[in-house]
Length: 340
Image (cartoon, rainbow, N blue to C red):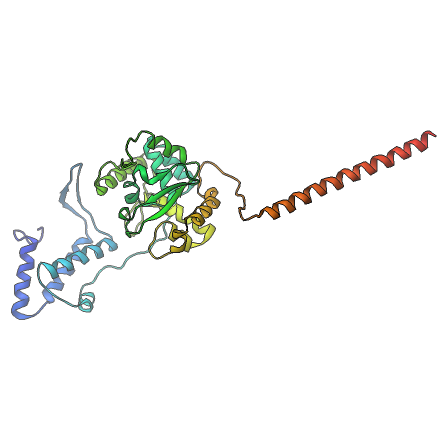
């Protein structure tokens, strides 16, 4: 609209469609796409966008976002405009900016504690659960009371298939330090179908609400540094999920970590074997907790091994006592000889 007003987008596409039908030349379509890519890479302070809460102007988009926008535009050109072009020709004619890849900055235990301690009780429980379970925020806001089993060890959360991005359900857990936070939140819920953290039945609205709250806490704490490549904040809700994956990867390897947090195609055998998954999680609790630490006991120690170690310990104590007794008797004999 800024460039072609009073024509709107649909009128421009229909005009392109008619022109291409007449002469068969689609170069003008690619020029339009390239102009749009260039426009997306610039700031436009004069173009205002209004939402319910505030007004902002169009800022330059990062390469990843531009590629997503162009993929939607291609679909629209093909479906609405009935304009067909080959993948090879589009890739060659439209110059998309290259994605920049930066090493993501991990969130530390101290930073997680700062967010938890700056939040209200319900949000505290959410942040503690996210760092333990590796759930996406979109999954977390859809959880219902019936999905959380506080009686199991560890506390078990069933992530239903319809909650997930991949449409594959899975089981996840939280550590013992997070259990009291969840108990307080769940204790005020009446029905099994009540949402635990969601503010609306609309998942997107719930996610936006959580992101707005997190943004205010982040600003209050001063964690406002962004990645240069995409303009995203280094401390975000996804960082809790990454924290969980990182801790599990250090203990069991990346394949297990990816499978645990629900990346499609990883480690389905562990997801099926819930007993084994719970056992492995309990061993990793110490790595995930930000307040408490526990002694990790090797559960693979058999009863026979334990008995053997106990017998050895008793024998060692017996030898020690016997040696002390022999020394005492020798000393007594020496003393009696001196006295006589």
